[in-house]
Length: 342
Image (cartoon, rainbow, N blue to C red; front, side, top):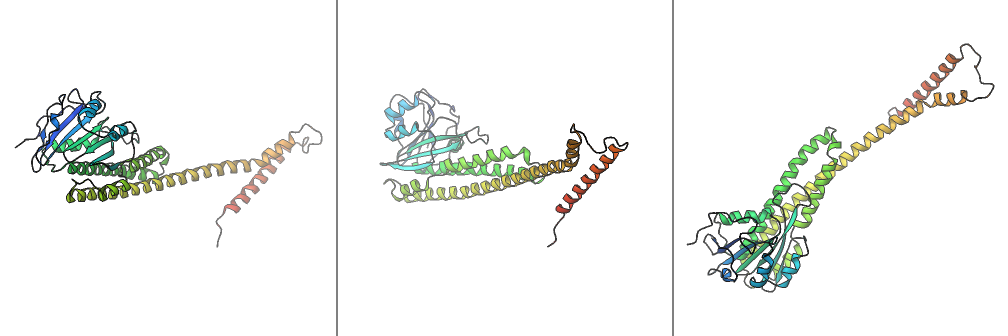
């Protein structure tokens, strides 16, 4: 009986062909670690009733040439490698399943750009996964296989990967929700100006994760409606359950987006109130300064006949007139601003 690997394989390609890890998986048995790849395809021999899983680092120059020569993959797999991140999807390619799975990078830091792609080719006897950047979900799957978790079929590996991705997305949503609790307390306390940019960044993150990480329902439904002949009923049911888990997580993502939108609206309302208050103060200063500015302009004209010019108390008389006019305007403004009774 085979035993699980006891020493970790290097994370950036264990051999000259860019293999990160490889396992032979048989039903009811712990996965058996494969040696480094050779020039041939002897490593692709699957155990009875089981399959072989090979995980590659496409950043290694030897990975793609080996896959083209020995893995028996369709051209669509290699064509999609150059297209970049698209929506997560699972499609049928002849007698195989082709999955494009977007995942957050291993050093994910709540940035919308920290999303990369994993390409997975699944047949009855072979699973090939490839990525360019370390990803969290596939690394969780590697650790589970390393611990000796059994994978009876190749589709069970894909199901395990999708569930790991849903769990990872759920953890991200939980961390964002906890951060939103702190921001909400600060916004309600009036410290909204420090969190406006962060709210916008979190909202962009949630929108991008929802768009990229959620499996396309149409592609998944077509695959489940017409799967390859080797896909069993329990495997189809497992993919259905994984899809339902994603639906629950996406509902939480939508709820978080709604919370962010409400907090942005609250912050915008408070900013508008502060602007209105500042504009009101500026307007009041302008209105109250109107008498002195008007009289000073009239009295400053260099023409004859200016009243009180030769009066000994002319300055004080003019000052009293300005004070009376200012008080009258202030009283009128206060009367207009008093609360109206219904």
